[in-house]
Image 1 (cartoon, rainbow, N blue to C red):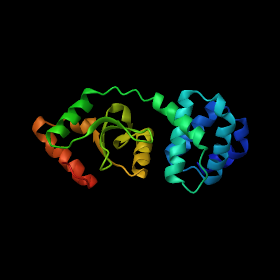
Image 2 (cartoon, one colour):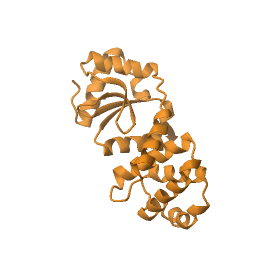
Image 3 (cartoon, helix red, strand yellow):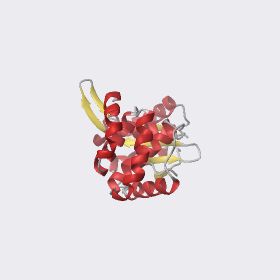
Image 4 (spheres, one colour):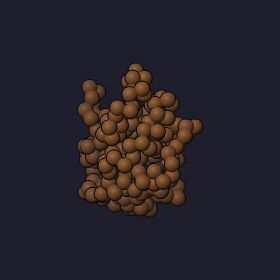
Length: 205
């Protein structure tokens, strides 16, 4: 990534909106954007801002959050631009709760963990279930959140990136993978969730 960044900085002026959005998202997702690249990219975002579509603006918003959370010493975007990025990101959120999410939510309610369903943080990040006051969230991860590696299923880059952002913003995230949940009987699920909360160091009630 360092070699790519070194080659990219002097050529950012040649990037169109798609190139820039893909590049910034990849570096933010990997969590390894060097400071000189970040500063150059922030300048390029301002220059190309009118040319971005909503998908690209959403990628840029995640990059802006990455800078705020993981590289706060660097300059941030103008408030008006970041607000526009957040609005575009919000337009892309179209909750379609799965049966798996509803099952986990119901199990949490039965064990006394009151929560909001399909909660959106003030930064615009979504959580399947959340207790905003305690800043604890639950994410139920279906097959699209994983890639198959030699050692088995691993969280994909986008899922890990979102977790990093949420944790950097002060949230504790409890993850429930589909392949663990699906093999449990109804009677086993309460204990499973309690162990997940205990492992995260948070209360399950």
